Length: 211
Image (cartoon, rainbow, N blue to C red; front, side, top):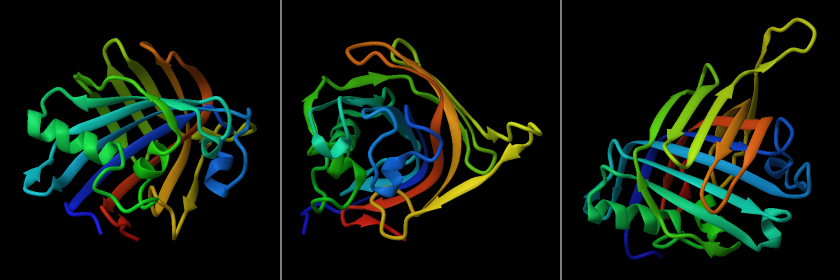
């Protein structure tokens, strides 16, 4: 068991280059054979040991040349500039899979697949998210400009709603599926357009997702 107990509860937006639904959610290979993605989390209630994390935000830019489980990925971790040094360290430990049971969270799983973790970025993270409406905006000056929207019916133009439920997943229990657009700068430069996005409520601890 990890020595430090921690918990994150909040909302997340994840956007990648795959087709709507994302084959990774179903243990299948990525649509284009590679995985490029951004993600952001708004922490509504959180702690790492005695350190409170309420109200802070984190984000990532990630890329793998093939399927995630094949490794050779790279990551830019981004932490809210408002975090104190102690909060920064706590968040980076969670994001890098430390103080976590092996394989218990997507942070811990992904950490084992990175060849390169770039220096952490401490920046202003502007993040608006409505899980039920499937809308999001992420603005991190000099790093990420992204948005999420509902999928539209190609015939009627009406909003299409779909959910994914992963009762034993390492990221979420249920997410709403939509689509997104993103441009990133820095060492991982991505350009994603009209591809998979999901919107969810997170609740995870050092032992995994609370289902």
